[in-house]
Image (cartoon, rainbow, N blue to C red; front, side):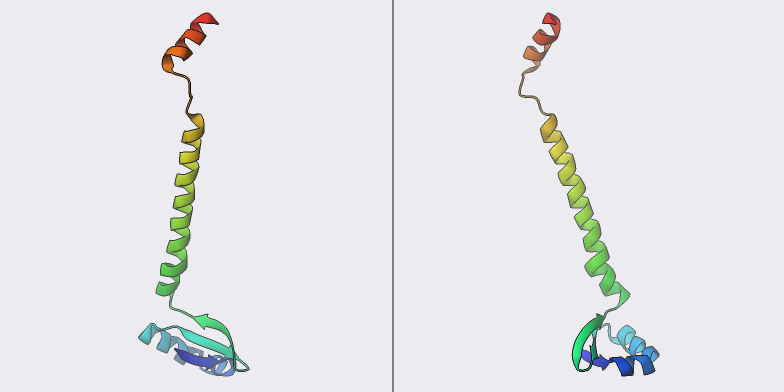
Length: 88
């Protein structure tokens, strides 16, 4: 993984972005020789974060629907319910 310090990034932003677009490999951003961030392509971002968030939301919705369906089940038989209605 290529490393770029903050000063180099400020001075050569266009060059760094061109390299990211060309190789598609993440670029480690350092400040004072300490890693502080990673630059990734928009494609990687969408695959890793946007699609994951959407999948998580879909799973949550399905789980909520299943929970609502379970809670609406009655343990009484249809015959018992009809008898109860008739006797009311």
